[in-house]
Image (cartoon, rainbow, N blue to C red; front, top):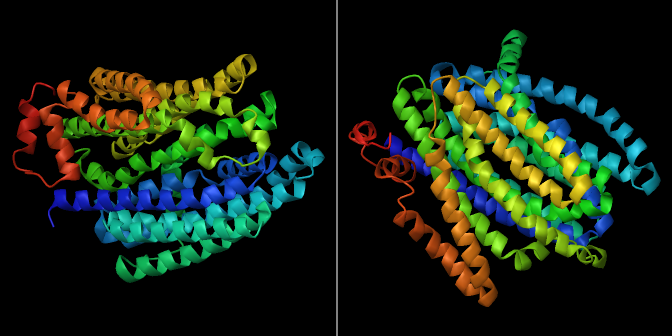
Length: 504
């Protein structure tokens, strides 16, 4: 199989697996969220946010560093993978020790008067344990990705989604308490991790486990920049419930979190493509400077163009889509109009996150993982300041505007850092025409959708690609790069076109 064909196969495998997994989990979540009343739904969002802040941090950074090491040194890959497992185990143990007292303290001071203290403690510990047990699956993922066996990981991902959805559906029908949901998620995730590691050893590579604490520490140390960045990205998506609860009241959490939980699922698209292209980026980062920059620019623009019609479609159809992921509790319907107002703001924020996610891969490939931390830190600081100001002044809708400002800050600062190290991207080329196309289609689709929903959908599905082609949003040279990802192409004349085309 040629390099282009393998890359396309890997990217398509992960993309399809994530689409299937998200759809399956979406069905399960519908059962869960419609089962919960408005109060419990708010607690559900708090629990998932709380657990993610504790558990989802440095593991992603260690996996990324391990992938880069294995991809550039396949001979010693099993040792790098074994070191990643060791470091992940130690990190998970430390975080679980931290989780218990922190969970108790938060519940004691924030939820004691609401009768949900015990439920929150049990649920948060179980959910944090689910994330931490998943560290072992993430470490295995480093082996699947580096050895380009993503189709195996894709199958396992779908399997995990099916099991989780079954837990949601069965629990909803039997009216489980939240703590039971999260406990069973932990048990099923534990079994899933065992299966993943058996498959990794049998079909990919056998990790060489060795108790080299110095090497594990060096791996952890090298991944700190990415680890902090991942923690901040988790904070970026999860901090809204805490600000809204403090500044507007707990009952308003659902008004933001319902559209947010639906739309942020689309972030799986850049996250699916990233594992397929990252080993190649890591190998080419130092060897082919111009091609690396042009490839990065084209990929970022293409993903942004993919994001826009998806987001516009979900935003235009929000009156039909949003009720699917909200509680059937009548008290929620009293402020339902507020969630509809926030929905478009979150949508544009998610669209901007597509190119933002690509920045992370560029930083790692260029061995500048600290840039990820700096850019996301700047975004989170802007987000926190604006949420305090805007939620106080304008209510929950202020959190939507703060989300857009956060993503813009990450992008602008990231582009500036790339320029400083001599790897600039053409920002106007990246965003001007795609955003213009998105705004035009959005405005027209909103009008046509009110006349008849089929007209609005047709305009988005057909009109957006046509407008992109008419305005030549993607140049011929950029199409060459895109074809190398989604379709086998000629690798002989590929570099020559990049060097000759005036767009570069």
